[in-house]
Length: 359
Image 1 (cartoon, rainbow, N blue to C red):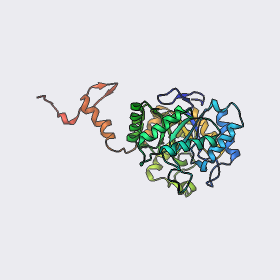
Image 2 (cartoon, rainbow, N blue to C red):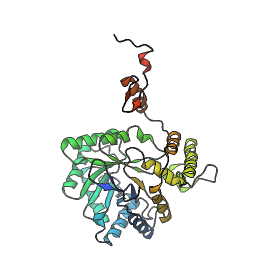
Image 3 (cartoon, rainbow, N blue to C red):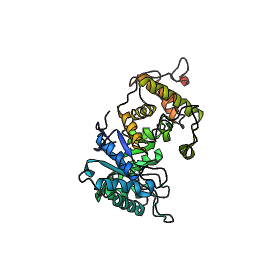
Image 4 (cartoon, rainbow, N blue to C red):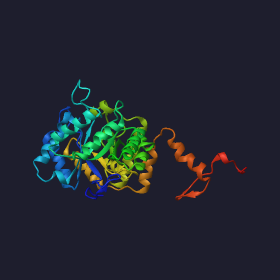
């Protein structure tokens, strides 16, 4: 699926590429990102391959990520309107200021204005709530976002890293009030992090949210660089997110086997797997170097066989919170008692007994 084979994001009319360029690494302010020239080279590479979706956040490299993108677009008149530009709000860039971040009305509007200034644009295509602000009623945030839509400063609303119940509440409130609902949900999702399949991904499908997975290579552990027993993994990455546990190594082992069979890199196999998951609209990919980005973009054409996908599904199967497995396995047997429904033949619930009698 090439980058210009666009997909519609959620229940909306917005079309984006199957891979979205994530800009968290743009800028060296934290000591590990990409310099300005390399960041601009990555934007160029992505756009020249047909991509149209760029995602950043106010908190990324203290706002430098947004500034790099804004300067790039300002130097290329006419480009801005041909891309889908998204940024996230919530992160506080002003220590000691209780209204410098979060999702209250004052903070939401101020963060939008600051992002627009750094990005040197009049509007954002998607403005993403980056996290859940427990101290703010969700209707306050939603009304502020709807006002920004009415003012023409943002086009669409997105949610990121919210609990499923809170995201569902937000969607219901928005529809009930006639405010702008969200169209997308950003969440961590990879072969090494699948617990969102219990609540978040089904909720997104029900409420018209296209899913954008972040960290699809699990902070690099699925990149192919790491092989069991092949050297020290005590890297900056390990210091930030920890090293693989034994269960993770089993997934990495199978990933390497499948990648060899499919004649693709482990990173391409991992990205192909997550891109094909139900509900996923576009995968967020990022890199610190141009060669890393090129390798990840090459994965857009990778294909896995049903057998290879099944192997990865099996080895990475997550333990989900109650009642996910109960709803998935027990409920159909209770409801359909062995009948075939929607192409699926159910079991007969043991609660019926061997020879059920109706009274």
